[in-house]
Image (cartoon, rainbow, N blue to C red; front, side, top):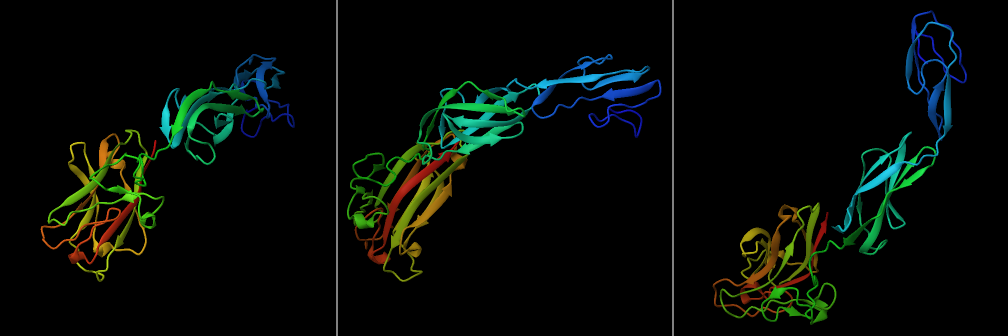
Length: 335
């Protein structure tokens, strides 16, 4: 209770004070953990908390408390029923309590995925398929108060799928997900593959200006948070370091009409490596679009060229047996 400066009540240690008539008084009832304020007994306060009045006579006022047995009310607002998400769940809940919410937990079936201790009750959870396989789950939110009461939301049935958008990412020849020129997809020799047995093989004819290509269209969700492209490339060449290369491999992003939206990389004998190396690119700028990932080998307008063989491989006498090996193309998206 607050009164004039230096005076006040702090029950249970100090429950009485003397005040001059006309003194303005404010009483505040604070419940212990697990209890809640019910009402004032005596005086004119009744249910108001804090209660303010003017001291004009001797007054006995008692704060009435009771054990808090009322659970919080909680509803899950994200995800929504029937929604499909890629590799991440954006949780959101609305929760209230007659005393106060201490935390909100988010669940997939019975597995706890996230906890928030203050409003707004939101949590982004990256999906781990090693812990929970991809599939359809009942998502719920649980809200707690200081007394340990628990409110549970109605379940929301939603689906989580892999955000890896590239089909047949390792170029297995028996799976026709890539559009390629004849003979591009192969499974031999397996020692040339990065993983598995398949890889792309662009066989260029010994003709100046010839090209071969392999591509796959993908649609990036408009609400994608991340869109990370990765492909593994190995460049073999017997040419000395720094030799100018003529045969090239170019990786581009194209629209549905085949127009180039961006060039990811151009490779030649200058980029040679002893082993596969990973190349990474952020494609989030293309979210909401259907794009084509396009890998094209090309020979310059020169008559002195050899055929290309092996896994996105280019070769010419000018390039000293230049070879490109491409494998494990992935595009991982989260929402």
